[in-house]
Length: 296
Length: 313
Image 1 (cartoon, chains in turn purple, red):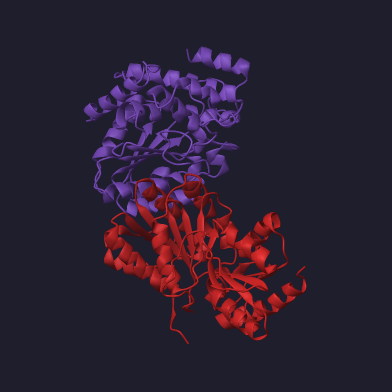
Image 2 (tube, helix red, strand yellow):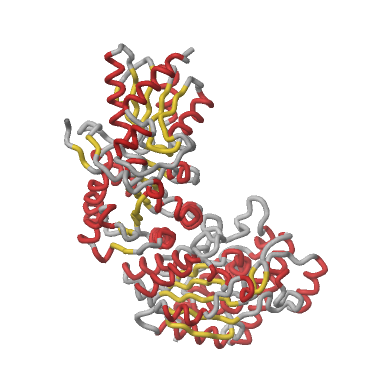
């Protein structure tokens, strides 16, 4: 169902522009994608450790979602980040930008070695997603709850232009505590935006504790349904389920789709998994070594 | 007495003209289209008009998404809701990404009248001028409003245009050509300069005319573009007239007066007086009663000119 011709086009572009990414886009099987996920996780913990600050937990929980999108679903050209027919990926949970930087670098948007500059002075890799600094970032985010509104506007623009490209927005479950998320959800339902797919990375943890204890945003499914959305619930670390859900969302007519992806915060690094501490803390040298061993 | 027009009426009609000329113009409103007058655009181009309901934060985000994808969105609501209500969305979703969104607010200032303090935006200019990259304009009458709306549509930055609820007399000549960032010389004079914006333009001219009869000749400038401010005109006025009075329907803190004071403090300090709201909220009342109560009349401007001249060196 995926448009392989165009996906391949994106891969060719990646290979053409940067020999440094021999890996970009050549994966097809889910085993291969799982290997990409491991590499992305290594990139994430390494860049955050080098930066000395950042948000590993919510970056690691979104890896399969971002990899499924950038390796299999999105029509995009790393050599031309503003290609007008690209699918739009909007990172609403802007603190998780390391997972996006890793994906963009592995895809050839910019050299992998640039990941070492994360959060450093004058780097184009800012602490939160910044549209003006980084190729491939559709909007600046970091103040939570704003990405879905932007995605609605993007989807409306696509509809006005009768464009075939689609809009994908990645939200966090903590972010669903922001009222604006629901203003946006209401309008997407009202406008029947079937070119919009939202994915909630439901890792159950926010800065100061478990989401169910801080301000319970559940039941998300019922909430989105009541706003006129098609809802798909999946295991957000099962690549087959992620890909199937993204594929199904493309076929739904007359309403937007949200994929509620149950995930584990800090996924892939034992001591970060379900650990509130690593929402916004960098691993030290010793922890990095341990993490990389687990992700080898 | 020249015919008075409501600038928001001109705004609504100009949007329709722009819509005919440019298919990328789109309009968003938050349940106030019949007050902001975007209703004309809604009637002319329903497919390019987006009713967002009472959700200003969402409206600004949606406008950003439209702008990011080649549209020229005009997002409109009352000034209180267009700025303070959704400031973070304007800051992060629009300004930080430099998206080409045009925010046109109406019903600004005390002259909203009877609706009272919650509806009287007196801090919107301070807020919006603090954002890097924003162009901020306060037209003085209908003639200028038509040109300002066209200018911002063609100007590739985030823009904020501040309009009012009521009608104002025409103060700009028919041959006037608005230019972003350029103050308009309304009266030549050497004793002091009155710099005004928006609704305070007509009282400023009235004050200058009254003072002329007492042999006090004021230069009068329409400072309609607050950002980027016309530093040249300000410094020239300071150097040539030696005293400045600013007049605005806005808090003294952070509006025209603050911007002018900052400019002359750096380049050419001279005594200043500020005709503005002095750190108070508004209240219900008729517009004229409110302007009198808060010291925003031609008489207040004239008094301020006499005061500032006393302090000239």
